[in-house]
Structure formats: structure tokens, C-alpha cells
Length: 476
Image (cartoon, rainbow, N blue to C red; front, side, top):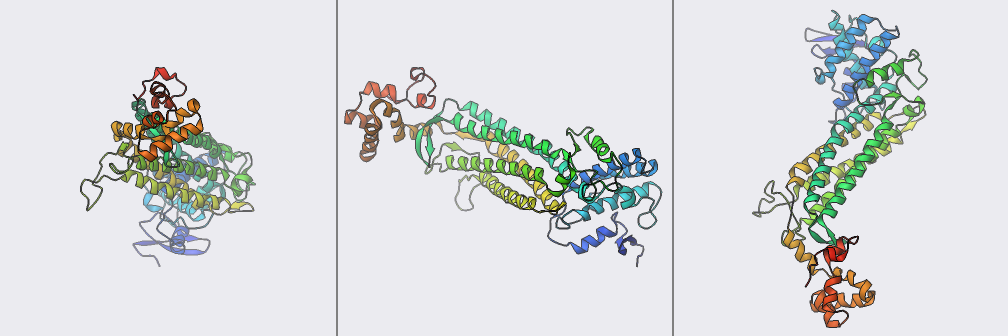
């Protein structure tokens, strides 16, 4: 029984008591009890995307004469308040609910209906002039509006948050590479010495890898633009007037920066969610790229005296509670953990994408939740990595030069001159007797000192497309 601090709400199963301060209704209240699973709440990005769709749906329904102008105005005004964040506390439901997202769709319908009823001079609950199903959900089904909301939220997250943050990181890496074009270092394959390259080439490779990931993410947005709106329950459009989906997409396109349109085949985008899986796969590829880069950085910064020691990390915080003066690759470790988390989310999304049964995929909330959380996580990773590591990253040029000049793999330049077998003898002789390559080659009599200095030129080896005599050799 309701009292002054509560009210009665009803749905098809009967009355439910709801706290008076809440704008949700009976179905939301039931869902709070039925789906008390985990701490994860439906992302507010999906809630707001549903609000955008409900707003566009009301305008479209009014234009198609299936909703009166007065109720349309109240619904639009209520949606505007929801989109402004004024009702964020009234969307309490767990991600782990119906695989269609029905409980969240009704949560949004109920909040908008109760607020619209207030704006129309009515009350929340049983005496409201705006009904959550008959008016707010008019011409719609959870099965078409919820996946459409995930598309809207995911596309905005990528375009407005992740891509700008990623672009700034790429710019920072490119800028660092430009500073280090003259720093020649030894390369490493299999974690063993290899032939030389410049630090700019190494860092530029990281930037290029991220640039490719950025391009793939941009390409994936087009797949999200096809929406199932107007398909209602199974894709046929039962209960929606002709042209409803097209009108809703027209409203959604305005000022969005996205080409929202009705999918050519709504059955396909309701029974499966391949576009969302594809986007998550590309987010996972970015995670793999970031993971590789931070692992490279912490290897190259290891030491500083007992490891590679080629890079100097910014000292953001003390690295140890017991070892004074220690600086650890904490940004690398944080990003590495976050990217592993994203790869796990990507695996979950792939499995969820397999969850289509006949006319419906029943993993929609999981798809939306993981996509949005992964997008936000990598956005923050790109920003933190740029601000707290890349922008303060330095090289130890002297140490890099010492490691380069001691490397036996500079012998690679001798192979075309004296043959592979003779060059191998030089390297093995130098290693066995702790000689420089130059001294080993001269002691074996396989080349003259003058010719050795001409051939074994690390700077030229890093730029084989240039003439050797255009680069200053580093031996002699």
C-alpha cells in the first residue's frame, strides 16, 4: 500500500509500490528486484541514446499523425531534460538483464512518461496523461530501439572521444620521432642484436601502427550507421506506420555528424550485430598495438644501468616503497593491464555476437556495455600515455651509441664485401676474444682498415637508400 513517501504504479502484472521520489514505474521497480546481479549499471551513454531516439520517435509519430501534438511536445521536453542529465539518477538497472534490453527500454519509457505527464499538468503513476507504452514507445519495440541506441552510443564514443585522444597520442609520437632522426641505435630481433636503425624509425613505427588502427576505427563507423528502427519486434515493422524509421533517422542525423539511415534489411541487423562485433575487433586491434608499444618502451627503458637503458622515463612518482630513487615504467604497466582488459572484453563481444537465435540476438546489453567501456578505457590510455610518458620521454644518446658500436651484428655490412662465412668468422672471433669487430676483421686479414671503415657505417646501414659517403661513418 502506498503512503505519503510512495505511490502505486501499474503494469500488465498489476500494481507495484514505488518510492515517490523516483520517476521510474512498475517495470523498472520489478527489474530492480529481479536483476540484482553485479555492480555494473547500464551505461548512461545508452540511456541518453535511447532518449535521443524517443525524442525523434515522438516527432516522427506526430508528423505521421499517430501521436497528438500536445503529448509530442511534453515527451520532447521530457527527453530534453533527460539528455541534459537531469534524470541520470533515475536509471538504476543492471547490465545483466534481458538479452534484448527490455528492462532498460521500459525504464527510459517510464521516466520520460512520468516527467512528460508532470509537464502536462498530470501526475506520476496511475493518473498520468502520457503512457510509457502507448505514447513514449509508440511505433517501437525494444528489439529495434535498443540496438539502435547501442549504435548511436558506440559511434559517438569512438568519434568524439577515442579518435581525438588517439590522434593526439599519434601526434606526440610523431613529434618525438622528428627529434631523434639522427640518433642511430642497434636494432633487435628475437631480443638479440640486429642491424642498426634510428630511434626515429623505431618510434615512427609505433606512430604508424597507431595510425593504421585509427584508420580502421574510422572505417568501422560506416557499418554502425545502418539502424533497425521501424522494424519493431522481428523486423517486419508491425505496429509502425510506413516511413517511421526513415523519419526517425532524419531527426537523428541532424547535427550528429553521422549518416544514420534505416538498414536495407532490418532482419539482418536485428538477428545479428556484426557491425558491433567488427567495431570491437578494431578496438581490440588498437589495444594490441598499445600493448606492443608500452612493452617496447619498458624494455628500452629497463635498467637504467643494468638493462637496455636507451630511453629515460619521466619520474612521475617514486617507484618503490623500499628502494630509494627507483623509477618504474608505471604508465606502461597501467596501459598494459588496461589493454589486456579490453582484449578480454573483445573476446566476450565475439562470443556475444554468436548469440543470435532466429530473429534476435540476446546479448545486446553485454555488447553495448563492453563496447562503451573498452572505448572509454582506451581513450584514457591514449591520453595518460601521452601526457605522463611520451611527452616527457628522452633518449640516452651516449649509451645508445656505446651499445650500437659494441654490437656484433654490424658485421652484416661486411657480408656482401667478404662473404657470409668470412663475416661470420669475424663475428665469432670478436666475441670469443672480446675484440671489436674492426680489430677482429683486421687480425683475420679479411679486409683492410680503410675499407672496413667505408663499409661498416651504422648511419648508412640505417639508411641503405642513401649513398654511404653521404653519411658520417662512426668507426675509425
